[in-house]
Image (cartoon, rainbow, N blue to C red):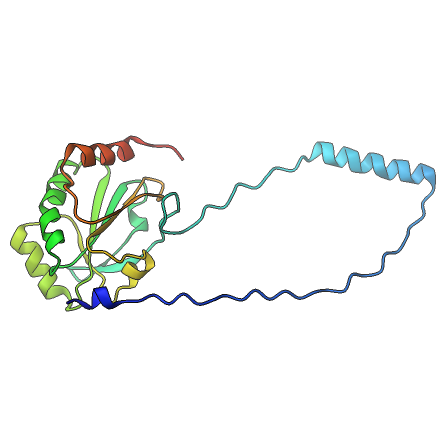
Length: 208
């Protein structure tokens, strides 16, 4: 049994602390009627000439559908590293897998077929291994089956925990703007018409 299934995330309880500030005593200002009208006119003119524009709602960074997917940096099999952000503008399928995972072995050939058929379509697959034995077993596995999509190493579960993954395999589909489109647990036939249509729909979408 892999240590992957024994992992537990502890969620700390956050406590909000509020400090109460004493309200200062108000002072009354008396002005002449003419001066008051002049000040009021100035305020109205300023408000009309500089209308307030509502700030654009800040986009939430998270791992649920609709969130901006958090960036990460992981090792590849060539000794370098890869980040999610370097693929911004492309549709990305992140797949969390392991060499000891039988469902992963079942779905990965269909991922390879999908990948090969979309090489020129602004599409990328990032296959993040959660094996804890380093690069050698992952490299042997990839070479044995002839997979050509990028295989990455998350042997300390940093990205796995960041994306709250608890089932292997789990896939996360991210659109061109970096938003999470879907979280898909379990093995899938990625070369099926339904899955290809789902990927193609994300590739065609170019909205901001």
